Length: 322
Ligand code: ACO
Figure 1: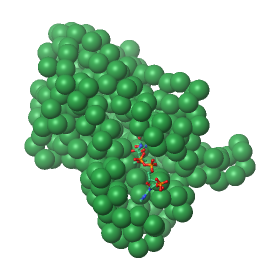
Figure 2: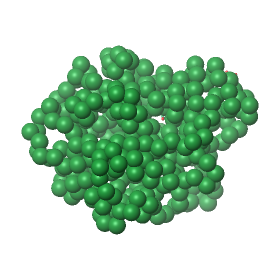
Figure 3: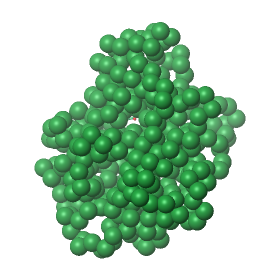
């Protein structure tokens, strides 16, 4: 059995950190409201002119350095984003050029906050089907550009950043003790479009802003995240008791803890970065994997379940042994 095994991880955050108190100077909100509703204390905001592919390339370089790989060791880059620099080409090919990769192929995946899960499942499919041996999966976003800064119900929740993960094909035993990706579970249901969307884009001819029905999203999130995580674990022949770390999409501390509770996994086994990053959409999971590894939480051999939900709705989970 071929498994897609993690060989490196890295991240990049814009230098500018905006605290809740700073936000409250221009938005009718308070640190108390934001922290109690979301757990968010601060977020990073990209500098003027700093784009998603800039952030993605920095994360990519960090991951390559972590693995000791060169850019041309890669067969493919899959980049998850909803905030690509340009309508085309993809942010992935722009990162490819920036890091000096002159072979293989690169493309973007768009599944909003679940984008990294979808990209990871696609990378796994390329690897186990023998189409690629070394794949870099990136989540990179500049959601600050999509905010309606007059809508206090959304603009306080999001931030910018990027993370990258390197996967390599490894011949394995074919058991749940193997390192690498053990199972994936992807879902979408387009009937829920109105709950979370951007009211514009190339084909509509207007530049849009993010719109969200927060309470409805919250309700779907808690139910669907626990469900998809459970399904992915079941596909791997594992259960909640086997989990060393839940690495959830970092949207909101209340969603994260409610999901962990439903899965009967204590918060001591959940990697939480939302307080420092806010919701960075497709970047939040690779950021949490990288920060969790750097903190000494995630160690080789640990069983990780990572899960996310986003606009679409789209949702899914990946079970992997680090
Ligand atoms: N500061 C102060 N007050 C605010 C703010 C703010 N930033 N935003 C809203 N309020 C007010 C509202 O105006 C409302 O006031 P009112 O009662 O006088 O009308 C009050 O707070 C309650 O508003 P609600 O929207 O009902 O607040 P709720 O408790 O539902 O919390 C929140 C809102 C945090 C958005 C919550 O619904 C939530 O977490 N939803 C999930 C959203 C999410 O995480 N989306 C991420 C994208 S999808 C994903 O990644 C999972």
